[in-house]
Image (cartoon, rainbow, N blue to C red; front, side, top):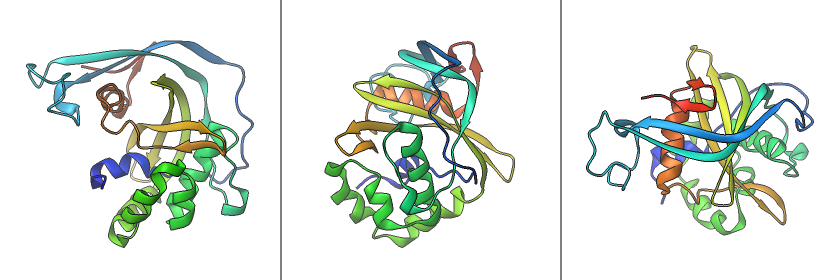
Length: 212
């Protein structure tokens, strides 16, 4: 079973009441991106990237990716409008399902091989409630870029809450026969861990994300 803290990585919900956008084809910066984070901010403290390092030491990774020149808003939709034909539309479905906490819709957003374990996790109503309680406070959500890692696409999603807090998190997607689906396949990946920690700082300097 995925730990609750890791579960928050995949239950990311945005509430923007607008029409579904057309995927952006221009105005993107395509290149390699560098992700920097302090060892103390890594989740995998026993991993090789943290081993024999001080907590204030910096770790970094570089991945092929892009930063969008203009953020792309992520809408809230009804289940009947769910569409996984593009990463952008998949994110709208993921966020909307998490906002309302509908178990079968949440499961449908994931790759087929992960659905049985996810159903078991969602049998815990307290876990779902904690996630919904948080993500319904988000007043603005948008895509700011993406990167590629081991055949998966990491979509950078920026969340701004009603309390004024901001965070950017990577949502992991994989293209399947039934469209772009969410996956936890990288939850124990050490490179993904650096990306996660770097994005959480919500800091960007050119093509470098994170700071340390």
